[in-house]
Length: 235
Image (cartoon, rainbow, N blue to C red):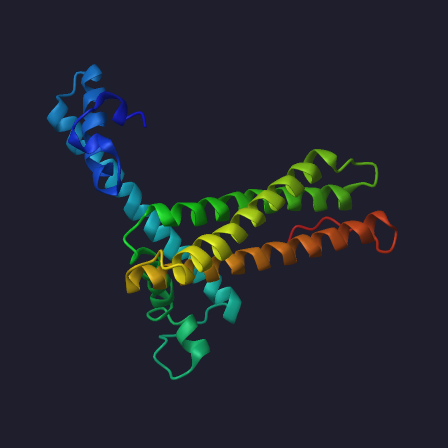
């Protein structure tokens, strides 16, 4: 937004196609206040944006690989090529594991409409914040019986409710009803992308609710006297 403030060219109308020229040109204009020529500043700002996109994609794939290895199980020091005819080996493989991450990412972007992905990204991001509050609430409950849980528990409940409802709307109404049943997704790529988004949204909802259930069960046990509070550990 800051970079676009000084730019009112043809690309300022918005859209993913105008993101790079908006950012580069607007940023170049802003850098002129530091004595940097606009043409040089625009190139530098374009490099900043592209670098951000590349590093974000790299980080997402790396984290996806770690999570996949945790799901299927991988011992310390284990290295697997992934070319064995075994699903676990393929999921662990240093060559085949990234294909899972790239494949899912491709299914999301083949619709060609970046705006349809933003709601899913936002939902996952806010859900992570809600789970962080859940973790803090459980920690307070186990730390001391005198600690109040309202300051973290109420925001957690609000964020979980809003985010789960938003993801439910995204999965069942926008993607299933509007795009798939109602024909809003006209191309095959858009239909595949909508189906993938729907599945991911439902998975996020299921995982979030299961973690909330586990957390609330722990809080009830500790505060109800049914179980001793967990001892702090360095592990």
